[in-house]
Length: 530
Image 1 (cartoon, rainbow, N blue to C red):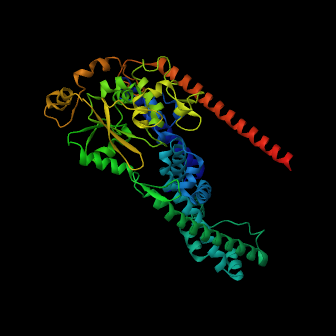
Image 2 (cartoon, rainbow, N blue to C red; image 1 turned 90 degrees about the vertical axis):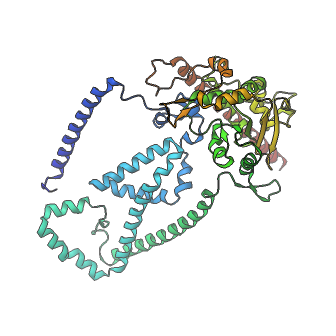
Image 3 (cartoon, one colour; image 1 turned 45 degrees about the vertical axis):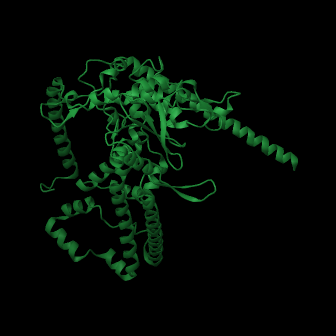
């Protein structure tokens, strides 16, 4: 603009500079690439650009927050911004300049990534607010202008420009002033005066202005009310949840905090708690006890070993767990408990210990299956029961102890705590290996990054070496420093996952068809009765 370039010449200059910058970047990357400075992106980042069931990493695929966002998630978290945001985007889209370009790029990038991963919907909050503000501000300013202007003022405005406009154009020139006006995102709405002119046109615009103001009022009121309502739900502690009892009475489910406080008050300070990694940070922060795993899941092999303990048979699980922990905590009580998650655990275990589900990376044999005749008493819920492999697993025994004829071996695991509503259970491991515990706690057996460092990672006790030797390190695409690859496993994982998804879809369609046929049959019977 300082050089008074036309729009076409300005774009030519921009393209030329971008081309030079891109060429320099390509040359720099080509020079650095052989040194392994750049490596493949991680599976978590890779999941933003592919379907999340096909990252090739069962641990990443198992996390609910990594799944694509549903359409109703946007309205749930942004409400009226879903209406005004697109309006603001369309307004900004028609202008060029640094500010509009930034808003457009921000909006498109945030929307793309939020579609890929539900946890990234929060990226839409700032840009949706900005765009909605632009749309609402335009509507309000135009509406007030139409209502405050009488017919004479409107004709005078159309007839001659203001003194400020004349002075502006005389100083900067007509071309510069026109360019500035064109690139501003706060111009007045431009209306075809040939259509909306005269007395009828003025009242038509005022009617539209009144409609806009009423729309803004009711929308803002609804948005304010909704914001206060949802803020109460979002601000509630995640471990204390409101619920309703079977009799309809409102209750407070405080099982999780209750369990963590019980561990804090009733276990030795050096107690090690084994639980699925989802609850690791809560155990550390609230129960103040060492946990075997937490949300730092970069050590895939360690998470796979934990998954193997939960999903293998009770005897093998006990032989491993007694060297690692003093207590085991499980989430029970239905819903998203550990038994519901266990098929994901089986896949993760099999990604390292390939003998767990030989030839089947998705572990189809570890799942819920239709109830077979004569075994209705084993049903977890209507129509489904654990497969033989799931039925024999440690997680099934710990979650279902005392139900459906399931009993935990009291010589190995003893239940020491059950929360009020049965959401959490804690078991003590009988006969834990004290020698392994002492070996792992000895500072001499830790590996420090440098002598005297505060960062010293632990090691597994020697008694587990035989188990560890059976595992195969999981080769992820981001392990670019390793010269190995596991393409056969990845290929089989993808194929079996697709087959499983097709089977599940077919089963769902069959159920829907049967339900439809049953509704039609009932309607026909009712019609015949009439």
